[in-house]
Image (cartoon, rainbow, N blue to C red; front, side, top):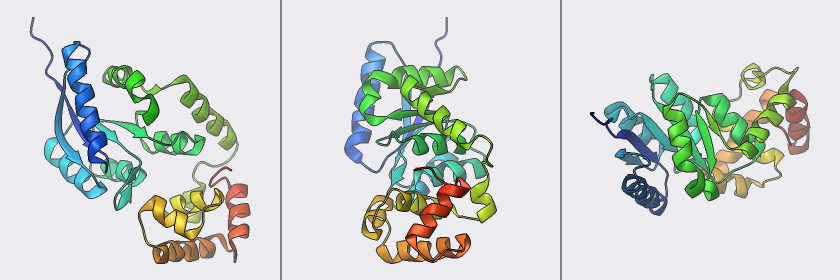
Length: 225
């Protein structure tokens, strides 16, 4: 009987130590005959991830949502634009409802919170290779809580207001009460860029203050508190 070839995997995370930890975990899987995985590339940014995805055609991408010079959400969307046909499994430090919902809505096939990685990664990858979606019970609850929150509303509110992906991210952190400095730090952009995005957001929402923007965003269902 011929064994199946190893599953090709692309690691996308801007922390080298975390990527090294993943490879150590993969070695453990191989020793214990849990999974056969072949890392075909490592990326720390959206551009690197796109380039390697086009070159290597991995069956699976393990993707962080916060990357140097860009976001995982942007990566998911752009991978779709270039016709990536593999699976995307999110490995994130964020467990907030909206992060889970947006990632899955964007096209991810599964989502794991990083502090649950050792307990869930093998099962998650196996689940994805069987053609299913993976969410742990608590994240599934988060996802459907947001799904029901948006029930009866349009899921295309951002498109109607014409917010860009980055503007949606800035708006998310604005609603969470983050300052311009905090938003810049979380999104790896400058404070000047944050201010430029806020100016565009205010114009598109037809508001003149942070408070008005938050209220209107919640009313339209662009984000949830």
